[in-house]
Image (cartoon, rainbow, N blue to C red; front, top):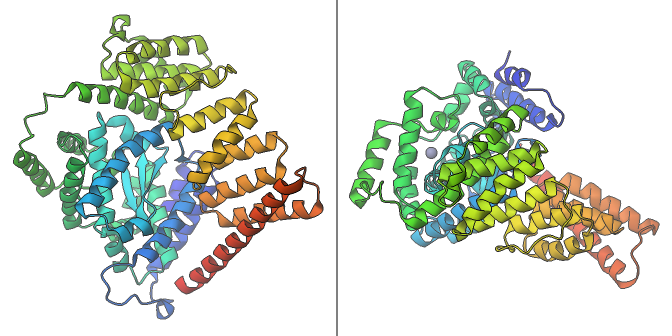
Length: 531
Ligand SMILES: [Zn+2]
């Protein structure tokens, strides 16, 4: 049995697993190809002695991988956690840019996208082309945004230091599609801790993983550069040390199963020593006990987001019951000065209660957070969004409330969902038309817009929005099918649109259909060259 067959067998069978199955299929094909590299060796493109894969080629490789991830049921677009991650990611990008670690050229060519993966194990990884993956398990286990920042800064530095391109160019005898398949295969293997161990014992996967792992020197460089980026971005440097402690503890317990991060990032004595030395040099090693008032508030918000990640990582009834019980154990007297752990428990408990359809319970837990948030402005945004979610879950069709941070992506999308549920599609169209004009790659926004347009009988526009959501997730084939369907509808004259607006819709659809056709042709040509 090949490792991937083993994984396939171990995976729980559920609907919507086709994407993963497809990934595994490609992966097993690539394993067998990798065994006989000489067979087609003569026709492979030679990249020469360049030490780096060109940025454009690395991005193409990344796009291939990303388009598979988008279709995987474990890819998760949670706008609330997404905004939280962006609040950490954007300052890191700004700092990397200011330090000269991130060139303007690389910034423009790469995607710089952080993808959330529905997986309870502790992991984060950098992919070719500026895509990063973060497991829910990592967010659920770190105790501060600074710890999360230390991991993201490290991964960001692997990308900016072109470690990935150097690894990939070492593999330049492999075809790009095969590289993509290898990476996807490793990711699939890492999804199930038991299966991953078995796969690694299986031998073939060891070879693949060793080829794709960063060298010790690269790890040390990512630590060094990442530390600088994180410090310049204004995060507590201590987060770097406490994250190391956490990983060290896990590695002592030999907890590699739930910490795949340790497999790809072995903690060597040099790494630990250098990290400690850096902190001492900066003179911040002793500041662990002195957390500022602002720092404490940030920890409370982080604890709520960690609670959300834990909930989304396991929505079984048993797990929801456990989260609810934890929330109910938070003493009532705590409401005023909630400790981070208590706020996290109340937040996760409220969401769990809503999923268990215990809506009044959910509301009373959330109300305690609202009371606490009155004294802590940084909590307000998270608590307001929670409240909106609970209203939706309970089927309350009240008009979407004004939110303190109404311009955030989470606010825009959650309010749109609430308006859709309450039968106000016109409001949704108005809000999201503006949003997608500045965020054209927001697949979820396009999807919601398509629903709102469909509800208003704007079939042509709805199909176009649906098509755009496929484009945003790099599924150009599906997008072309939809644009074609829209064109057929126009020609049949059955669409309800009329006059000038129908004409404008029609010309937009024709233009976009041509652009996507062109994209697909270029992609097919590139694939021929890659082979
Ligand atoms: Zn690393």
